Length: 213
Image 1 (spheres, rainbow, N blue to C red):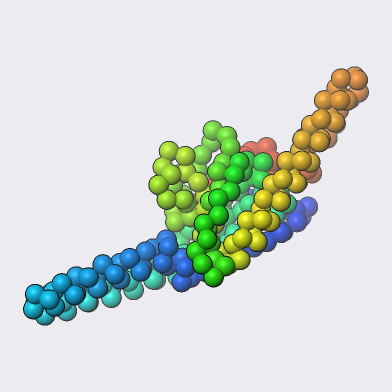
Image 2: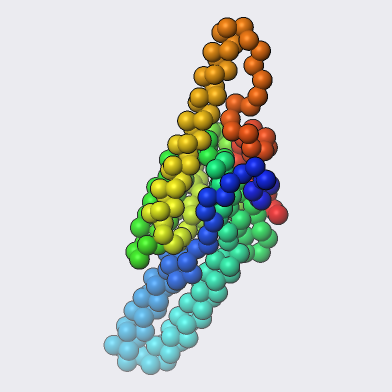
């Protein structure tokens, strides 16, 4: 389910950038600023013991978050083909999520600087993916209709453009084939063949899905 089929063409694949992922998804910078503020306040009031405790706790918290970010980046692989987007995610148990391009209604690019960025995907249809399944590869604060997100990817603008072109090409092909089928049906000719590019039927018909590898 999470491996490109023989008749699919891989357009791009990549992983999150670790420093950006740690800062944006695991909020290491925010936590560092918070504990630095506690240390400063403790020192201002002359409470050296509290300052030391806050320093130790801050270093431990940042180390844990950095470790989680490292494991997340290491276990993540995004694959874009001419038929679908595959997300291999999961720090403890690998989950492979298939998102056919025909289910992507819109994509939103969030620039994180130095070419890195996030791409959040709005999905069509009633079947949704859960935030717990996607985390941390989900757009924040979208609880009722979760949006999968490619996190902290390098050269994000180019990937967003590539994704947009792939979705547009796929939709155009699917629309043309549908029009051909309708035209043949109107003339009484027998209609055979798929209603979309000739990729694996499970990708096209079953919709987006996620399951443990």
